[in-house]
Image (cartoon, rainbow, N blue to C red; front, side, top):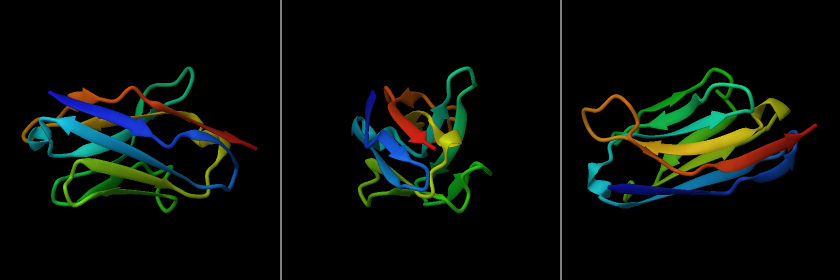
Length: 118
């Protein structure tokens, strides 16, 4: 089993920056890719960014150029640097992880709230 704990959310103004962190524990050797999802009230959960064990990254079009996902050398902590935040970025952000050869994310954190005021 893998446990994921997010931190770093908060209330900021438009244009500000935040950095989210997600620490993995447990059977971390089972982790290949990690990602960040978000869900706003009344909307479906969407993938924001993801990073593989090889360091390849993927971003939603809405955050390209503003958000950066990274991972520490031990590959047990993933970060999401969010710059130029917009009110539309307001959501609960979830960290997720999956095992090699598995397409869906199996492990999820409890989420951290990000609120961007205009």
